[in-house]
Length: 225
Picture 1 (cartoon, helix red, strand yellow):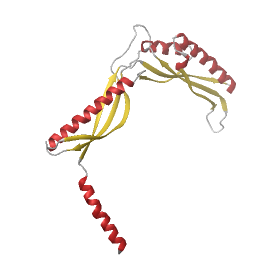
Picture 2 (cartoon, rainbow, N blue to C red):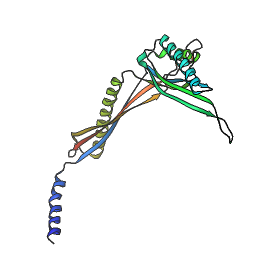
Picture 3 (cartoon, one colour):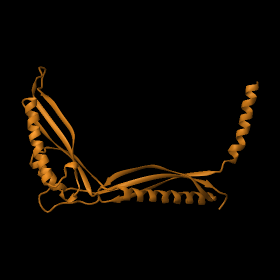
Picture 4 (cartoon, rainbow, N blue to C red):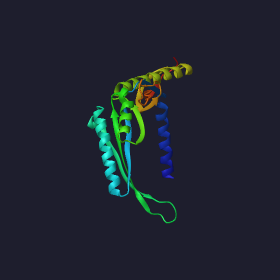
């Protein structure tokens, strides 16, 4: 009985504390900023075959050296070229009695192109000199901080406006800010323009890069406005 009495007393003591807590409102704001990208990352590589593993690897190395040289000629810095994967796999014949008929070697690299008007020319050049695998192209901002900072400011302004609308509708006043937390920053492409050279180069669509920010703000509530 003594334990039950103690528990009841504890609940009685907690009730006034809850009653003293100031009412609050929590709102989430979002902001986004779109900008034209100023760089691209291209995933490309060389796939080669040979009767033996050594022949496949040698053919792949020779072709990749030509591709790397062509990238250098196109003004791509060595620091902007990164090997992403090297594979060597046997090729098998079909049927029940499967046998190795040769080997396939593949080497992939990612290349950062900082002059967007040269992307199409770079792709055409490396394909002509041995690159036979393209795994995609991604556009981005070399310095995303200004866009991110602006998206955060817009997200805070959006949260403030939502809080004012809600409190006005409820007939209460908006008090001081209790806390601000960031929900994260994300990016997404939005097609907006197309770069097509007058010659036979591969046309490239850069679009826009969007930075999105989300913030959550907790306000105290006052009495009727």
